[in-house]
Image (cartoon, rainbow, N blue to C red; front, top):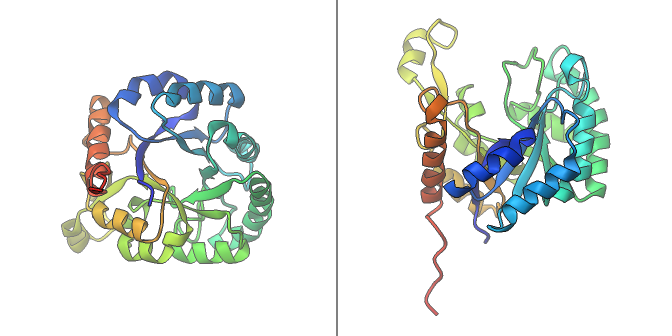
Length: 293
């Protein structure tokens, strides 16, 4: 059983600048992400420089991510589909076999998006399989519902069933985190047990649910009832999460998705992330200790 690494997300365009500053904190993997486009970045040169920075400590790039709407390609998403293709083609240069992001979405219901999803990601899945790459969809709703949305259909377990039936490819799965289920008042633990075989990467982000607000005001009133949190400050039992992952042979990473916590933010951002790093390491049982011979 391999150790589950605890890492963090870093903007792909900023990686060469940021990585030297945060490497001393003890992160064990890095997920490099892009918003809507790779923005003309020389991916081969970036991969070379990133690998040089990480080589001394043997730290891997766990995944590459592109977050936009590749199904419509409209407006600022005009380059999103091409960016999926580029990251698939360059993944091996970064030493990773995983590219992640949003599915995208067409106008209308989730069901209305499925034909275009199967068309676009059917081709991307073949392209990825030829290069030994897997694709994973983050489970963020981005403010969407079953009826409408602009970004992603992969935020509900019923949608996952229909997605994987429409595109039954072994190299297509999920980039899962408990937060995005908790904001819909879904219990993440039984969901994880059911779907763990389709989870290729885990985002280290949590949530706090104010059940007193839910009981008094419901979820459509003026009072906030849930907040995204950095692990260690939210409601999720990460010891259970890691135990379930290990029981099912998960050997990927948990990469902290920061910049969401309402308390540990701004100048306190890295304080919160390093706390989360150490907290998650403790939840996995600490560092590996060999048995006596």
